[in-house]
Image (cartoon, rainbow, N blue to C red; front, side, top):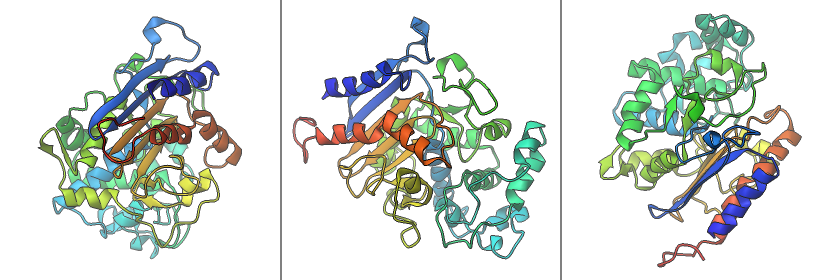
Length: 385
């Protein structure tokens, strides 16, 4: 099994599909496989650039499920907010129309709030000039694209707005809140926003404006907004992501420390939460933009899922746009962490062909199929055949 995974990763590095990777597989709370491969920097053979277990990867949208979603449910658990709180009650500037006054926290978590996929007009220009007040104002005042609760549309804009709600309620920024409620209790020493040591990070190429991406997130707008956002910004390694995942599998506890109640974890990780609204996926891109979700999680047991064909109907996962993937399957008590520094695919949300290329070259489906296909059914003395 180990040799098969080694060959799977090394063949991709040899083909030049990505410079480096980390892969960690755990089952029943035990790490069965954890290895690092290749280089942090494309084209480098330097020993100092070799990927190690301490290397940080840009996990982009995995931020949504490791920071934003659990912080929402922590506040719910503490009686501070509810899923049916209206966005405009927390951010009055958001309520610019009768439609927008109906948008709730639940709608934002389900990507059904009517918030457009595209960044608001003028936002990038304002943020680049340092006018963050204007940049956030156009986030809040952007018109709805559709009636809330009627359509699923993956939108980083809605996640950023939700992040701002959290900061208002918590009275601190997301980085501080995540460290207090999640990272420190779990002992996540390699998970952070704005990593200070850029050389510890795996590089992911260049942004649209030519910024070198090493310890910085891909989108220029999000860079100018400060990189501490409800949508993206987190850097981490495989071991820390596994610890977070094991906490969820253990129903809110890790190493005897309780972060969430069992009921809370169940509510934020189980079942399709956009059940009556999601569209039957016709492609991998359609799956992520409008397919079935468990709040911010992708519901993994679906056609065109990028978590393979063998996952159970309880599996959830998340992709980071720079080439990182997390699968959690409670039925198999399994975690698969697959981190690469592939980089952001061109025209990700507008080009079907670039999306297919991205998924086929990294091939998270193949890795998950390989792992689950070599896994013993049930619980025996050996986890893999």
